[in-house]
Image: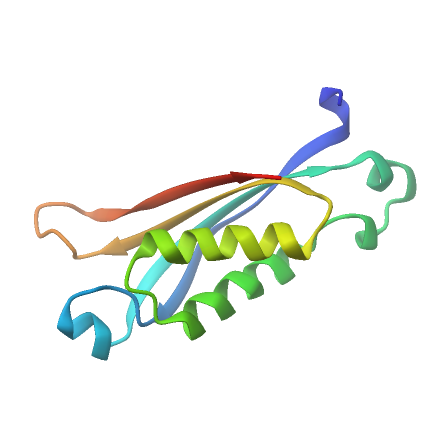
Length: 122
């Protein structure tokens, strides 16, 4: 594949309120997390036809990540990031690779942000 046939779609700063974490209060009280997505996709057909059906709708990708986070009640942000990546690759055959970053604030009083980055390739 040449450099002209792929691109990275991105969604940055997606804020989601959900149950995520392993501490007792995190299992009860929803908290805000921030999700960033980068998806490498094949543009060979998009460049010819200029049709969203041949691409990946970033609104749909953001909606998928939000639904997974809100419904999942994950203990670990690692599991949340992996599930977003797996479902995105399963849902869009045009995706070649996806990178998911999940951030939690306030986990460590002396750190601004903690989280995980997960990269998955088809």
